[in-house]
Amino acid sequence: MEGLITVAEVVTWDLERTAKEYRDHVNPGFVKMLGLLDFDKQFVRAQGVFIYDQNGREYLDFLGGYGALNIGHNHPRVLEVLQQIEARPKILPAAINPFAAALAHNLSLLTPGNINRFFFGNSGAEAVEGALKTARAATGRQGLIYADGGFHGKTFGALSVTGREKYRKPFVPLVPGTFSVPYGDLEALEGVLKANEVAALIVEPIQGEGGVIVPPEGYLREACELCHRYGALFILDEIQTGFGRTGRLFAAEWDGVSPDIICLAKSLGGGYVPIGAFGCTDQVWDAAYGGLDKALLHTSTFGGNTTATAVALATLEVLLTEKLAERADELGSYFLGELYKLADVYPIIQEVRGRGLLIGLEFTSATSLFGRIGGNLLRKVSEEYLGGLVASELLNKHAILTAYTLNNPNVIRMEPPLVVTKAQIDQVLNSLEHLLKTNSGLGKLALSAVSSKLRRG
Figure (cartoon, rainbow, N blue to C red):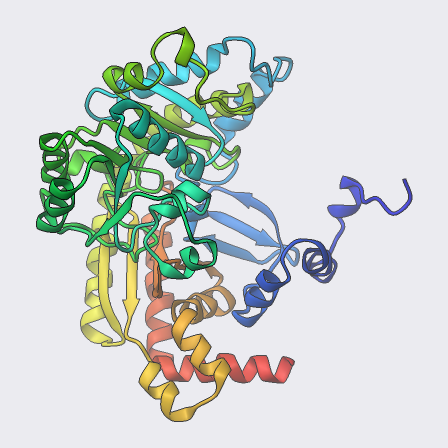
C-alpha cells in the first residue's frame, strides 16, 4: 500500500525524521520534553555498557534501561540462544512450553524463601497486576497497602498502589480498598493492618522511582511478620532491584525476608525481550488457582512465550557464571564511597543513597532562586526536571546517559549494566566532578538550559 514505511527505510532515518513521525503519531509531549532537556538523540548501536549515536559518538550507558540491562546490551550469550531456538514455535498458548517450565524451575531455586510457582507475563506492571489479583483471590480479602513514594507501574491496578499523585490524579477513581503508609514506618503499617481486612502489602526493598530510598535495616522482615500476624500476604516488588542489582541476587537477601509473592521483570529479559513474572508459594497459588475450575482465572496470550523464556534462561546463566551480583556489590561500594566524597565537597549534592549499583544522587532544590528570577519555564524546570538538567549536562558534554527518578525529579540515578568496569565508573566520577566545579550552583545550569531552549525556539 502506498505510503507505508518499511524496516529498510527506517534504518536510514535521521533524528529529524524520527522525531517528526513520533511527534505526529506517538507522543508529541515526550518529543518536546526530550528536546527541552537536550535528550533528543538517536542511538543506532549498542554493546555492553556502550551505546552509539548516528554520528558514531560513543556514550556510557549509566541508566541501564531503568535496571533492564543488568547483563548489558546485546550480550553474546543471548544472541546464541536466539539462534538455538530459531525454528521453534514461538507462540503456542494451548501447549506446555518447556522453556517456561525450565525457567520456573530455575527461579524456584534462586528466589528467596519458599517461592515455587510462577506466572509469566510481559512487563513489570503486568507482574504487579497478577500479584495483586492473586493476593485477593488467595485471601478472600480486598484491602491492599502500599508505601508513599512507591512505584509499581502505570496500569490501572499497579497505579492504584503507586505513590505519586501526579500519575494517579487523572485516572481516579482507581481500584478501591487501597491504603498508603509511609515507607519504613512499621507503626503506621500495623495501624492499617489492625483496622482493615487487608489482602496484602506491596513494597519495594529499595524505592527506585521514589529516589533510591533504602529502608531502615530489618524493616522488610518486620513488615512481613506484621502482615502474617494480621492474616495478610507480603508482596515484594523486585522488578528493579532483582537479579544482582543491589549486590545480592535479590534485595530481599539483605534483610533475610521470605515473601509470599514476588514480582520480577526488567533485567529478566536480558535487555532483549519484554518479560515479567510473579512467583508465589505453593499455598498461595493453590488457594488462588488450585483445581481445574480456577486454573485459567489468570492468563496471558504472549506470557511465557518461547523467545522470552529462553532469553531469560540465558540471562540467569550469565548473571551466575559472570558473578554479576558480587560484581555489583564490590563496584557499588566503591562507587558510593567516591560519591560520598563528592557530596562532602559540593553541598549542591544533598544526599547520596543506594546499594550495589542502584544509586541515587539528590540535589538541593533551586526553587527559591527560580522564584526570585521568575519565568514559567524556569519554574517548571525547577519543579520537574532538576535532575534532568544534570543528566542533560552529563549526556551532552560528557557522553554519559543517566536520568532522573519519576517520583523524585531532584534525584538522578546511577544504574549501569552490572558488566561495568571500575575505569568506567571513574570516568563518570571525573565527569560529575567537572560538572559540579563548572556550575557553582544548579541555578546556573537551569538558566543555561532555559536560555538554550529560548534561542532554539
